[in-house]
Amino acid sequence: MRTLIIVIAVTLASCVFAQHPSYDPRYHTVAEVIEEITALADTYSAYCHLESLGHTGVDSITIWGMRISDNPTADEDETCIEFHGGQHADEPAGVEVCMWMINDLLHRIDAGDSIAVKWWEDYEIWIIPQMNCDGRIMCLDSGYTEWRKTKRDLDSSGTYDAYTDGVDPNRNWDYMWEDYTATDLDNTKGPYPFSEQCVITMRDFFIRERPLYIVDYHSPDSCGGNKLWICWWFSEGPYTGWGPDAQNNWREIRDDLAAAILDETGEPYEGAASYHTKPKLQTWTYYELEVVVS
Picture 1: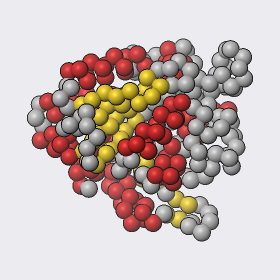
Picture 2 (picture 1 turned 90 degrees about the vertical axis):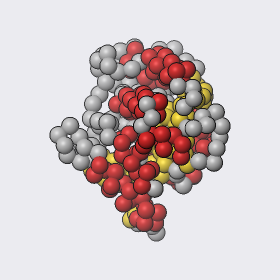
Picture 3 (picture 1 turned 180 degrees about the vertical axis):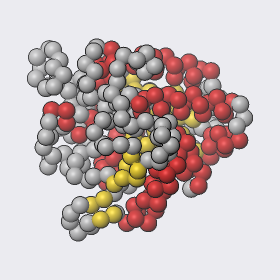
Picture 4 (picture 1 turned 30 degrees about the vertical axis):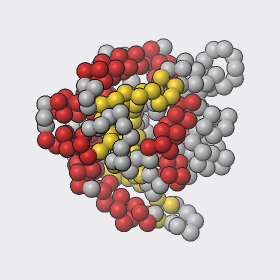
């Protein structure tokens, strides 16, 4: 478990939560992500395997996942840890962290770094840089800089309105979907649970791989600072308070990780409790698969 904490802490350390995208050329476009990870998979084929996990719902863009392991083409009985970014199109930091992680791990394994090699030998590390590719194209390539949703044409008009079209992929998960009413158009939950193909792709991947731990990178401008969220806090009902596994295990791990991640000023991240009252990748995965997500 200590090694698991270290690998998560190292990879989380570069994630900066609090920026909206611009046309800064340092951000990878959808095409640049695919081009770069394809080249890395070819160069370091002994250490990793690139797999097509599915596709997006409108532009049919492949959602690529990279497995980094000592037997990368085989599904071995090893602990699986998964990282992904780009669920919300206007939150680019997670995509950049994932791309940095892929490059850093592969280069370190190839150089014989003892820690990286041990991770490579002991774990299956999955990294999925961009989940909502259609939305990212709308945001970074098409000029809708505040577009966070998928590219679903909700009113079937044939054109896209930045406010009324699209589905928030993080509200499309089938946990409390029926009970949820969006308070604004940015949080549109979609016509039915799992209506969005990118959400289906991630759901099926989680069911198949059953990771021990998932990191869902976001960079919103609304969470009030740098936070490491983790399930599970009940605000009501018979289980008010921390869920038993969070209280006994993951809460301590969360606090250790948050303390190890420093922002640009040297201040540690804050450990936070994830809400359970909305549809969300984090809540569905925890509730249905008992997989902890931060």
